[in-house]
Length: 221
Image (tube, rainbow, N blue to C red; front, side):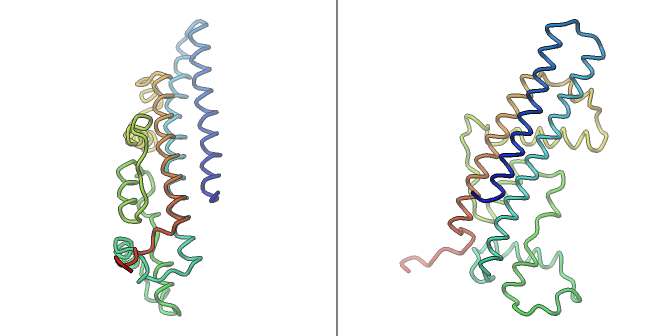
């Protein structure tokens, strides 16, 4: 098991524990007298679900890409050996991060160019949804296919990202976001999202194991 897979499993357990608290609070509210304070508390907890879910999604996406980069660097893959879309990403990354003073002492230009250029940190913060992950899959060559009956093809990741950003930037209050969803809706959304990320993790692990970042051999070769 690649380390990022175990990190995902641990974070997923944290999400499960949080969602169980949300559900238990809802059951307590139903069985007792629902005061305005208890309702507000429930809404805040439901809104917090979007924060912990988004944290799972972005952290896993970053760890997956880091795992790919680490394997490429460990195997000293050269620029020429990369699949063409990934070469384009290396060039874009190098142009974005280039610093003549920092890079003037590169001793192995092909390997060092790859190591210095592949960095998606600039685009991750608050931006991860299924579309971004599919775009990354197109560049790197890993699959983002999942069981759409269980995942809705990751459509819930946009809802999670939007609510998380609304909370993080103060566009909406916890009360507003929590009030818009029932606890059961939060549970269903969380399950679909984690199923999608679980499929992504398995796909990336297979990709790294097969070193599919390398350009395919010539036909008939």
